[in-house]
Amino acid sequence: MQAVDRSQFPKLENDLILRAALGETVERPPCWIMRQAGRYLPEYHEVKNGRDFFETCRDADVASEITIQPVRRYAGLLDAAIIFSDILVIPQALGMKVVMVEGKGPHFPEPLRTEEDMQKVLEYHTDVLKELDWAFKAITLTRHKLNGQVPLLGFCGGPWTLMVYMTEGGGSRLFRFAKQWLNQFPELTHRLLQKITDVAIEFLAQQVVAGAQMLQVFESWGGELSSSDFDVFCLPYVRQISQALPQRLRELGVTEKIPITIFAKGSWYALDKLCDSGYNTVSLDWSWDPKDAVKINAGRVTLQGNLDPGVIYGTDDIITKKVEAMITGFGGGKSNYIVNFGHGTHPFMDPEKIKFFLQECHRVGSL
Ligand SMILES: Cc1c2[nH]c(c1CCC(=O)O)Cc1[nH]c(c(CCC(=O)O)c1C)Cc1[nH]c(c(CCC(=O)O)c1C)Cc1[nH]c(c(C)c1CCC(=O)O)C2
Image (cartoon, rainbow, N blue to C red; front, side, top):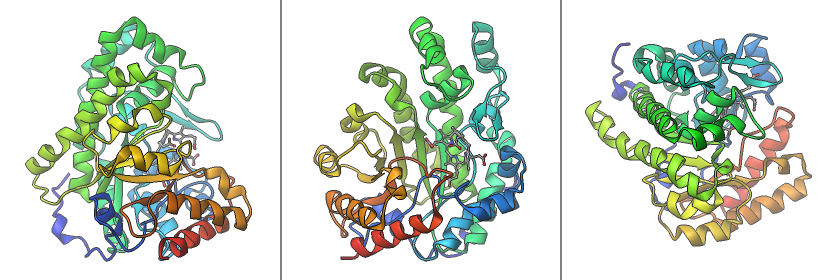
């Protein structure tokens, strides 16, 4: 891939989220929504046109169009776009096959179950620039098409969450295989987590080179670990990512400060540590009372979150009340807090209700 000249991108008109993430008190809380692009939008289905999910991600024209769809639909209401892709592209870059089964979710036909399986992945040489070059092309194109309206977020899966998918072979309820690895072969587990971490650092850095202006790490299965296992199998790797990135970015010639967010769903016990883990922003799920999180954070990082996505099925009246409680709880309109859901959108959501939610966030956030 040819080097991208980041100075050639259109000028950014709305940097609200970047300033908030870096700790500045801003005019109103910036808004974006986890999984803001995707199946709840009719225009997503139209463009995807029944094609395979990963094929869609790998087509820069289509992926950039899907990324921009929510920004276009909710004109002026969203303060960021997130590149249309998936956390499971790292396992793919580690040589694993992943298919997205319509209506069911991700499926790994050959999950890591034996020591030989594990060795194979550990020995696999990943050339990030080559294996994921489609992702960088999509980011660069999206930056141009966004034309500076809002910043573009890049992301990756957290090492523990990716290990879950790679060992379970898909989503899970019992986490039998992942837990077996952890408790029977801790050393091999660490080697796998390290391998994923190395690829994640390079993947994130190259997303920035390609045009990403802010990053997020999704540890969506964080809450499946006990607090003590989180300290051993999750936190050290998540920390490595935030610590290694600035230097890697400098080596790659990126001079701006790139904010980075950690979302460890369900890991309530780890909030204090996450606030000291080198991330600018910590994204919270909806189990948190904002006031408690604000107290624990004590101003160390920017907080993001945390509406229960289920509220979108509610009446306008209830949505308004939840928005008021959320924004006030996180410190009110003039703060460095970032509005988001506590997890992703669902395919059944009414786009008009999401619009109402965003409008209310702007109204309440501007008071
Ligand atoms: C765990 C996880 C995955 N993927 C992701 C996570 C972390 C966030 C979270 O916890 O939800 C992250 C993700 N996945 C997708 C995006 C980009 C789009 C956006 O956020 O706007 C992002 C940031 C697209 C997607 N990723 C997926 C779809 C649906 C695919 C389709 O159209 O059939 C989309 C739009 C598929 C996917 N991908 C994954 C699952 C479990 C599934 C199937 C279930 C589901 O859809 O929720 C893994």
